[in-house]
Amino acid sequence: MKQDTSRNPAREPDRTEDREVFLKLFQVKTATKADLSQMLHLERRCHCDPWTRENYLYELSREVTFFRGLYRRATLVGLTVSWIIPPECHLLNVMILPDLWGHGLGKTLMEDLVALCRSNSASQVLLEVRSDNFRAKKLYRGLGFKRDGLRLGYYGDGTDAVLMSLHLPVNPGAPLERTKRRPIGDSNSPRTV
Ligand SMILES: CC(C)(COP(=O)(O)OP(=O)(O)OC[C@H]1O[C@@H](n2cnc3c(N)ncnc32)[C@H](O)[C@@H]1OP(=O)(O)O)[C@@H](O)C(=O)NCCC(=O)NCCS
Image 1 (spheres, helix red, strand yellow):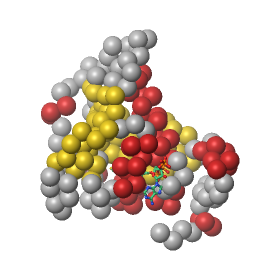
Image 2 (cartoon, helix red, strand yellow; image 1 turned 135 degrees about the vertical axis):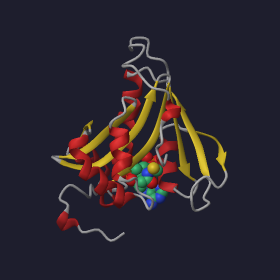
Image 3 (spheres, rainbow, N blue to C red; image 1 turned 180 degrees about the vertical axis):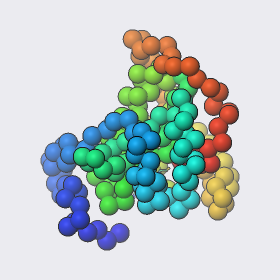
């Protein structure tokens, strides 16, 4: 992808030693309904089958759904959406603004998700990823995710889904459960990663 550096002063850490400085330009925090229009913009930039406004509003209304945003000042440049129902976390979506791909921001968001799981007594992260999504698969493998299987023709265009999971050591100091939760099966979410 051709990238316009003049429009994005926060990108391009050219040397490895600059990476830490670069990452400090960003902040990870809970994303809320106030960020909905930015979420939809990000979604449309990152996915060929984007979630709709209604999909987002539904997930934003659910107690089990966690939204963690990556911000450059007030601008949302990345997001994870996950269900956390201890002892499991199911990752529904992870995305980074395409102009910023390849600089460790996806890894930053995924590390935040792992920390969120630990503090909510989730000891396993589950996800599905398109078999042709090499960048995402590399990100997950780098974090220790293992391949559990394949769902043939899972996606609408016939692409297979690779099932992956990450097991987290139990944190004895963590609370047993954060809030009341509804069963995962009542969701009508249209897509998982
Ligand atoms: C998947 C995604 C979140 C990764 O974000 P990112 O910021 O580029 O991730 P990182 O920079 O942390 O890099 C992740 C890994 O991909 C590798 N990578 C970078 N460019 C790559 C490329 N062109 N091809 C394959 N792997 C690549 C990096 O080397 C890194 O691996 P490493 O840690 O072993 O070096 C981002 O590409 C994205 O938003 N994609 C669209 C949405 C999507 O497909 N989400 C996942 C399924 S829902």
